Picture 1 (tube, rainbow, N blue to C red):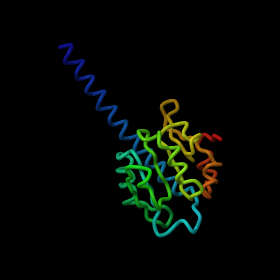
Picture 2 (cartoon, rainbow, N blue to C red):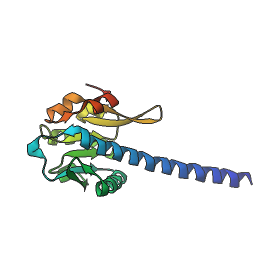
Picture 3 (cartoon, helix red, strand yellow):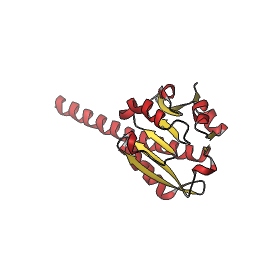
Length: 170
């Protein structure tokens, strides 16, 4: 009997953890969508759509696809692209680097140096390696670090709203 109760508790905890992970992906996708509305790309870099490339996180890709079906970035449609490597990334406005691929941040940063591309990482501390924004969890809440100097080095402008909600790092 005790083993059955213990097994049920473990299964319930596993289900809750899976649900929480799904909610976290939803929240991150919503943050990414809000960044599209609060980052200004040079006029020469934006066509009829805003392209978000996801490297290393299929769950975020799926959540962004849901958003892209019903929302726009200003007056631009949103196109979500999934990349399997840094070399697959081309003609994009934002790159989301999943935590499983975080070791690629230096390469990703080097490949996009000076280009109007916002680099967003799913692991805290990656602003030191070239991310403009990196997600982290503080006190059980999803937060983000933001490095205005990196964002500006990509010829992008960020609103005060995004700066004030993030934890600024240099």
